[in-house]
Image (tube, rainbow, N blue to C red; front, side, top):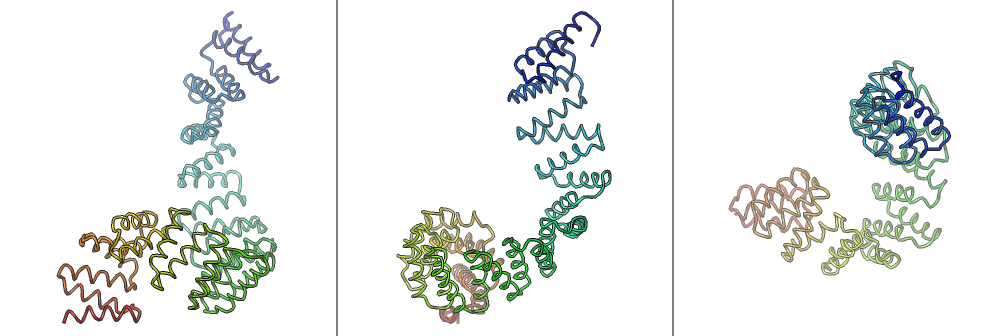
Length: 465
């Protein structure tokens, strides 16, 4: 400060403010800093302390104004930049925080806190490419750590650069072989590379470190399932149930494996045992209903789904699965009631939206509502071939054949072995008089059709001759 009596007065007020601030007498400190500012408006230090006091008083907007004033006077003032960065971060202003930390890093290129904080902010913003070199810089300056290599493994993985990701996770494991988090990260990358056996090895190593961690068994089971090693996956689910007999994921994991192996009796026994062991559970009844359905015992499945609904009237899945069975036994009107129950409890249940819309499209009724329902399903899952087929079919039923064909052709590209889609396309092309395309699509439909579907398609083909 200049050596004038005015500047001496400002300096005295500034010192008084410092003492008051350190004694947590913040209101008085604020008055002292303002007094100093009134006599010297060109000192960035005054504005920094003024801003810091506003921060402590819980007034971030006023604080930022003070820091901005300090930076107007001295654009690279480090204390003003630090405070600006911290307050911006706390306020959720990532752009402001990043701008400040970028300037600080330029000024202090080897500051560990600044580098790591800026890297973390880039990650929060989703600018992963900018975060990566900062973590590399931290390793070059301060040496490798498990944490830094773990972060790089995650970032490269998010960018689908799996070889780089794998290399950093492996280095992280070398630096800390007992880090369960790192072993899990490494396992996930192996899964993403479709090396399911490699993934399982990492998860099993993590289990050895923490054998009571149920989540690790789920990871191992998932890896074995990815590699189609069903028995190994089943073993992991059994271990889960030994630790936690009521774990629903473990129960359903075994049930799904038995589905794949067509071992329905084992699934029924397990689910009935769990009902006896833990009482009547709607979720377990739904699972049991699916077992009965897959084994072809539709009556038993219907009874079980109805039991689940009695226990939990808002069970969307129970209503949905019951509706699909009722449709199979020609009780479409009752099926519609249950589908609407699904949508009452879950308006975004895309399968129910599509199913209800398709029922009406197939029947040629309520076509405007049917289209709206199916469009909602497509909005939720735009690449679902079944939904696109339903939308194409409702357009066909409305007489909008060109639009119907556009959706049906897209559905065909997504589901290349679906008889219904080819059948619908045959009908659409036939309605336009395009006999060749109609015949080609009906012939393709025959390749995938059930016996009942094939009989109907054959009749259409015969009419062409």
